Length: 342
Ligand SMILES: [Fe+2]
Image 1 (cartoon, rainbow, N blue to C red):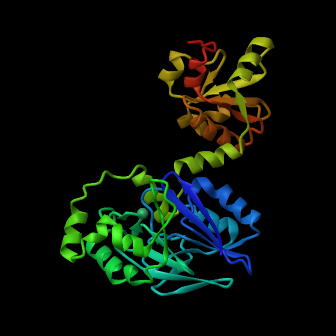
Image 2 (cartoon, rainbow, N blue to C red):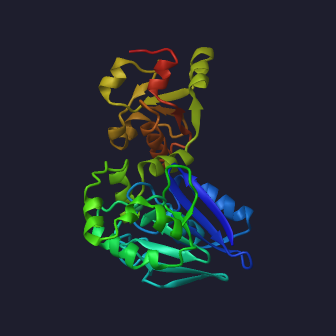
Image 3 (cartoon, protein in one colour):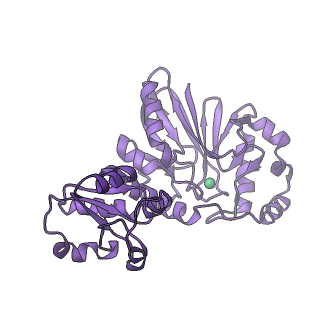
């Protein structure tokens, strides 16, 4: 088995390939690692056949939709998943053939209704059903502690205890465990009575994960994260460095149209010398009267350099072929003690 474990903070994802055929499957990919997965697959000569999410993640941004589209491989989830972009939906005990490897789905609801574990050869990818020394929480949407108990004690823990456990999370730098070791040592699995287990899970009182709203929104609908939206805009736009803009303003007649897209109060409090003001919210409404020459070189700026990127991308779509954005925002401009005008 060709095997790569990719860690992003506490999130674990896996590239698993068949050494004979070089077919591969990607499990629980995370948005910021898209280039890495593709590069790892290319380096190992692997062809990714399936992109699988073990469940609807509430705490990180799944790359399943983006990679499935980019690779032309099905996005695989359990049948209970709400995600419209899941193009192949599995039932309990369904097998995926990945070259000579077999990926078996074991439906293990509890952390979420659509949770499944994936058995491949000598290992099981447990998603958030079973973690090393823990279990997934059951207090997020579609979670159910009784179902988690049934999935663990009635299903997962009855598999071969020698199976290696690779979870979707580990926050302590551990890479894997075994089912046998978890049965023996995992504190949550010592509550072997159903009612005790449910009471323990109900008493955990965990804080909500960061990015909960955005992760659920994007993972359940296939919509974009804000970072994704900004990243796509940034890919289509050239930038100019703060120091280069400063030099240009000092050294020669200004041939740039600097467009400050912040709100009026921010603009009035201090802007780049000579910058014109056109708030992002009015860009499309006023652009025809404000800028008549589509070939003028434009540099947009805003407070943090994000909205200005969107503004520059919009200007390019409108035909301003030399629109770009400041690499950084007015906050960085002020902190760099570059000249201001108010
Ligand atoms: Fe999860």
